[in-house]
Length: 329
Ligand code: HEC
Ligand code: HEC
Ligand code: HEC
Ligand code: HEC
Ligand code: HEC
Ligand code: HEC
Ligand code: HEC
Ligand code: HEC
Ligand code: HEC
Ligand code: HEC
Image 1 (tube, rainbow, N blue to C red):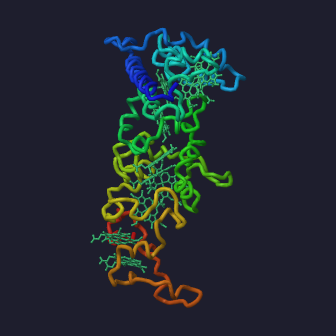
Image 2 (tube, helix red, strand yellow; image 1 turned 90 degrees about the vertical axis):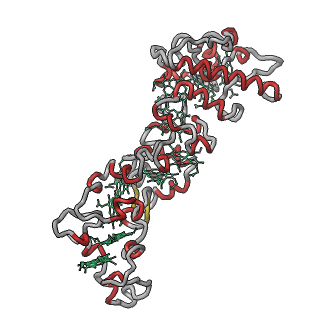
């Protein structure tokens, strides 16, 4: 059906109209569009029962599990299965022609959530009911502009959508974000569900503790407007205000930390003293630039010993001690 350009055109028409209709339904308006553009009722199959004849439990393409999701609740007037919302066809489009085989072929429903239907048309179906709330920033978000479909993350036919569950979410993200997967396997990391069960503290956090995957006003699709605001959500004691501030801390935590994982302790981007010496290079007490030579046991250079900056500058995030100048107490 969608092989010829003409049919594509028609399909596009149908989906546009469909989304119009759905848009109206989402806000509880009358189902039929006023200008008469609405899909003729007779193109719908009239009833979920017809669909379930062939898609019931045990059949190769069983679809019954959708009734175990919040979307399957027919008592919710906004749901696909509420009166007048066309049930399965609210998402799959008017499917009357799918019910019968023509010349041995069964035309698929107008909307299938695979590469037979363009991503834009797929997403329109979902956005018709879900364009508010967290989806406010979806248009123009990275995942939108990269051409992701809602169903790249969401599984609509299972009762426990894996992407909505802290324990299973990261596996969905890691399908595409392999680099981040590697980061979360490092020695120091945020306790997001890892990839092996031997990790001692997994599944306490999800990507969505920091990110809004539908897009946000913040950088890097973070839920908060700045990186620091995001970190303060859980590390409130680092917010201050401090009597003695350390400028890079209040500026951006990622001056010293990497958010996902690091092989340096405490998620640091570098080891000390090099961490500090990225910014503090003045020839002053122990902040001389060190080289890799002279490290014990090959040769214990006195300039290398006892010079861990934090031995003295213990309050690295800021101090409220009256004599805490230089962050030493
Ligand atoms: C008479 C049996 C029958 C009925 C009734 C039926 N289907 Fe199907 N459907 C099938 C078969 C068989 C397939 C597998 C694809 C094929 O072989 O053409 C299928 C495939 C599908 C697919 C996947 C299409 C694809 O290409 O990915 C969807 C979605 C679907 N049906 C939705 C529906 C909906 C919605 C209804 C009710 C309006 C419905 N079906 C009613 C037999 C039926
Ligand atoms: C909320 C939208 C929505 C509703 C309502 C819906 N579906 Fe689907 N359907 C999808 C999506 C999205 C997929 C793609 C796979 C997935 O996300 O699970 C899909 C996939 C399918 C498939 C292909 C499954 C496969 O194994 O490849 C069939 C068949 C199907 N749906 C039938 C139905 C039937 C029958 C109903 C009504 C009982 C229905 N759908 C209601 C969204 C919906
Ligand atoms: C006819 C309107 C309608 C359409 C179309 C629709 N939804 Fe829903 N959806 C609902 C309603 C109603 C709920 C339940 C109430 C809520 O959570 O807001 C819901 C719930 C959800 C939830 C959260 C519930 C859960 O499973 O835990 C997700 C995720 C979701 N929808 C995704 C989608 C996606 C993806 C699509 C497109 C394939 C889609 N929806 C199409 C009406 C719709
Ligand atoms: C990159 C993966 C991803 C994509 C793409 C995506 N979502 Fe989601 N979605 C999620 C995650 C993760 C959650 C759970 C959010 C949470 O727990 O804070 C979620 C939650 C939801 C919910 C239920 C909670 C809420 O915010 O109301 C709905 C509805 C929803 N998504 C709809 C959509 C629609 C519609 C699209 C396509 C326009 C879409 N999603 C695209 C990952 C995604
Ligand atoms: C189907 C592939 C796919 C899936 C699944 C996916 N993403 Fe993405 N995501 C991308 C692509 C492509 C980009 C853009 C390139 C990049 O930054 O890697 C991106 C970018 C991002 C960014 C950077 C945003 C920015 O503004 O720079 C974040 C954060 C992100 N994804 C989080 C997530 C989370 C969290 C999940 C799981 C809930 C997820 N992604 C699932 C493909 C995906
Ligand atoms: C503790 C908070 C936090 C958690 C949890 C988290 N991220 Fe991030 N993520 C960040 C911050 C902060 C950035 C940097 C944003 C910037 O620089 O604009 C970032 C950036 C990204 C980027 C953009 C590319 C990059 O690496 O800079 C992607 C993609 C991403 N995160 C994916 C994920 C995925 C997938 C998960 C879950 C497995 C996840 N993040 C969990 C805080 C977090
Ligand atoms: C949703 C809550 C949450 C957010 C947001 C968050 N963290 Fe964390 N952070 C944690 C938890 C939980 C731990 C682990 C504590 C443990 O393992 O004992 C942790 C540990 C750390 C550690 C110590 C790591 C180690 O190896 O012991 C650092 C450093 C850190 N976070 C920095 C940050 C930075 C920087 C940000 C902002 C990008 C941030 N956190 C955002 C919850 C959060
Ligand atoms: C100038 C570099 C630097 C900046 C910027 C910085 N930190 Fe740290 N952070 C460190 C160092 C060094 C440690 C290790 C402290 C130790 O070993 O006592 C650390 C340790 C931590 C720890 C784990 C130990 C603890 O004190 O709880 C957390 C959590 C943390 N930082 C959060 C943050 C947050 C949140 C920000 C942004 C507001 C931030 N850091 C900015 C250098 C920095
Ligand atoms: C990203 C750059 C940067 C990094 C990394 C950094 N600092 Fe700083 N630090 C600054 C700046 C900027 C100031 C403020 C200088 C000023 O006010 O003149 C400062 C000030 C200080 C001061 C003086 C505070 C005062 O009260 O006058 C000390 C001590 C200090 N840093 C120690 C450290 C140590 C120890 C580390 C490593 C754990 C470190 N810094 C890492 C940028 C950095
Ligand atoms: C043995 C303790 C000790 C060690 C180790 C140490 N410092 Fe200091 N540092 C001090 C003291 C004490 C002061 C205050 C000196 C003063 O105000 O007269 C100071 C002052 C500073 C200042 C402020 C300088 C200024 O001009 O105001 C910076 C920056 C600084 N240290 C960075 C570092 C860095 C970077 C390291 C590690 C490479 C480091 N310190 C290691 C004790 C130490």
